[in-house]
Length: 149
Image (tube, rainbow, N blue to C red; front, side):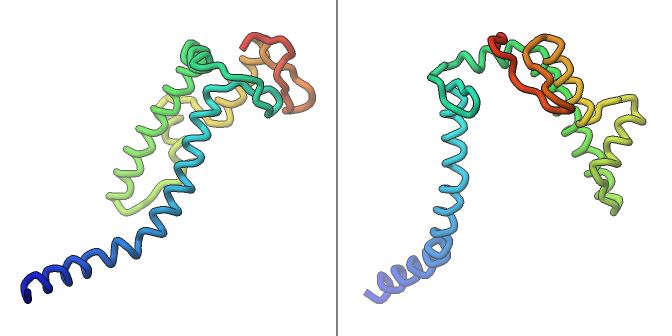
């Protein structure tokens, strides 16, 4: 009984840290899982002026994956991420971290003219030219009534 008792005591002692972490794990799961599940649910619905107007299924994905502008934005994001990580890794190894503004300057110096603000402006202008949005005021746009999604 002495050996079985000490084994049970060791198991209880080993479980204590996990039991102490359990409330934090539950809180983190609640805070991260709910938005994830709600985002998935929202991606399968159509919204008009922040109101759910019905279930669309995979139509939203078909529209976005068929849009060349989406893939251009994804390529820009991937390029920025790869370059940022590479540059920051090299500079961090050299002992100097780099700010995002400096990273964009490095990308421009390397011939990449991308800029996050410029990407948004180009995207907005493209949507306006395609007739998907209307300009209401300086910098304010709204979805065009009856525009093709």
